[in-house]
Image (cartoon, rainbow over all chains, first blue to last red; front, top):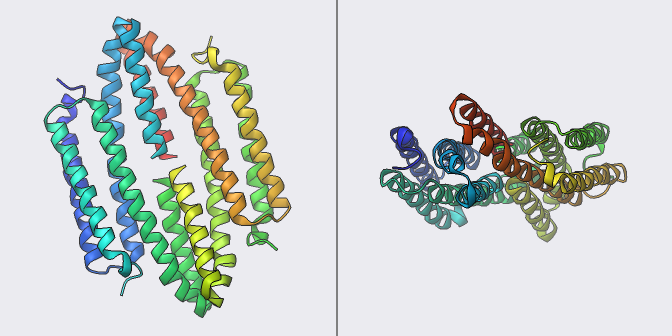
Length: 93
Length: 93
Length: 93
Length: 93
């Protein structure tokens, strides 16, 4: 089971909505909609993905990391190094 | 015609790819893929959308803003205010 | 004269405040303040710098870019390419 | 002792450098340096602060969170909720 299993339904709902937003942006481009209105939608889709990422990360800390650190040792260190790298990618993206 | 008409095909290609990435993330969640691997894909999709936004903004400056400022006056000021607000939304998202 | 000459005083005030925030963060680290409280201050200082950047960019579009595009030609294109690159650095930082 | 005590010296060095960068940006504004060159420095200072934040967060996960989760219970949950909120602030700033 994945760390996010309790949020799975919510994550899929959010991702379907983000997919719909990205498809909507495609249609806007095809229909020559004004640049700024498209940019507003791109910002909204980016925020939606960010929310998905933060939710996944929270579940990851609460389950995978918490479990590993309760056992300690090298596995715990590895999990935290991995989580820190994922956080850095998010902050920098 | 929209400011991005010369990049239209490229924008749609990028957006189709981003849509595919978001759909791929959904499948990963459905298949209980490991959190960190999903997060990597979310960062990639976010970056893809950012690239779309920067391309749209560049076209907007090169066409809509450049045209308005070559005429000057209140329209030029409005266009720049609008562009600055869109940039702020991007930087903060 | 720089594009931001009308906002100069405001920019310096904001930068002095950001400098004070960064110095405050140093003291917090020296005093072993709790990590999360320091992180809150780092986010605040980052936002303060972002506001400075967005203000500079707005002035730049309103003056340097608007002036160049009102003349058109290669200079205008260069100015916009340069502005787009600066926006990309901000969005990705 | 704070979670970052082993990185304390390194953090202070980075913060002093960031402070110097912010002071340098003030001087650039005072000297009417070209907008784009200032923006480049603002992006650099923002990245420097981001690196400080990611380092603090990594230490926080490795020490404060790891310790709390090894004990489990409500304290562990609180620590993770707090860390997630700090990560969200960073990602959105």
